Length: 350
Length: 249
Image 1 (cartoon, rainbow over the protein chains, first blue to last red):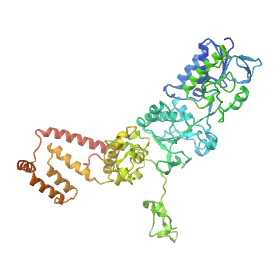
Image 2: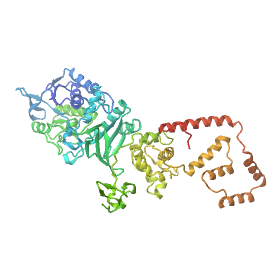
Image 3: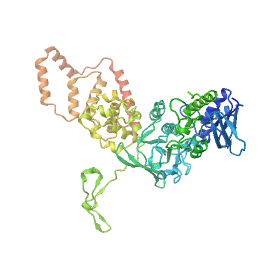
């Protein structure tokens, strides 16, 4: 129990894993490459979280405070791992800038994801028109308290389009996965925009709506029934401008007619990419990536959080698009697996 | 340019100028035939709220286009152009022009309510059809249907007297819809009644046709009903942005 468990990444999964381990008296070393803990919800300034409705800075910020005040957790920010070797129960690794090798009984990778960079879909206008923004930017507009505005001239939008599946389900750009959370997040944002700006119409352009599980009525139905958000079945082909407003072009597949509709603000629901550092992570830690570039999971049913390398665990969005609450659950599951492997390294964790 | 395969284009989208000269060149007739764009260039943001403000349309926001209503529809089985799912979409998205194209079919709903019982989201499509037909009338897109005229004649008599007198009702209805009073089937029906009904009953029917009996102490009810109707009519017209003072046709 004296050798700290190494947790790489201080987002929801890493914070949860570190807290779970420390709760049992296990020492933890929590490493994050960013200058502070919290991961995407904190670093990208998310607003209200699904499904609790709590502000990210309260919910995830609370998890950060809990870890920072825990004497069993050593925190190393602005730090990466440069070398990693050894076998389950006796891993050796080196932190960037250190010369001394450290030891870990178990290691959990909570290295998360990267937001899709929408300049990879230039036809959708991001980076060309200032009023084409991402869901992350709208989260920031809401969480900063500055409100939803057009970035070109600061005006309050009268009509907003949210385009789903930007950077997801798109073979043309090598993203063949569904990012899982964008439908729900977009419905949530649409409701927040309608609440803040009751005069503003919000249209969501979709191929399918995947507000899975209990998000169906709480987000999809609620956004239609209470907030009058309109859903249009069309994958938008192009965003241009008439010099005054943005023009969204596509085909409305339910009426089989082309559309060119003016909007003040276009929001791209950007997907979850594999962490841009995954190739390096894979080579340093000696784990395999699955075909999309996320960390390959090991056993699906017999052991929680396993990678292709025995004793090396994974939790959260590092191994595929994941929700915050499931990342937290996976962090706890990986902590359990780590403790089991420390206590009985020969047996496979349950 | 002559346009081939004109049958693929809606008539109203073909524009042809019989006399047109552009920069000194005569392009009259076929030479000036244009096709209007099929592209939808804007939405009417408030159309869905218009329909939602009328009785029956309240739940239209819920629709997710599963098509259960159209699938189960009595009229759709007879006329494939009768498509509640499609109209609900047009209303929700605000494609007013497209909706008005079907103004001659929408009111054909027979209110069997199969759609209402099958709808997974409780949209009440039958109510939406009723609200839409009402909207078309209020906006002046369609004249009042014979069924609406009958309803009005019927209810105005009830509101005035608290009772119905069939002879008077039919006379007024025929007059308003421009139908002859001496239609063969009606004459036959009356002749049959006179021959078969007991004298006492016939006498009572004859008397009520002449005297117009009313329900006792009806005036209080009449005033309350009139007040409610005026209020509702004003509400509906206001929701549609129409002047509320004008008496509904």
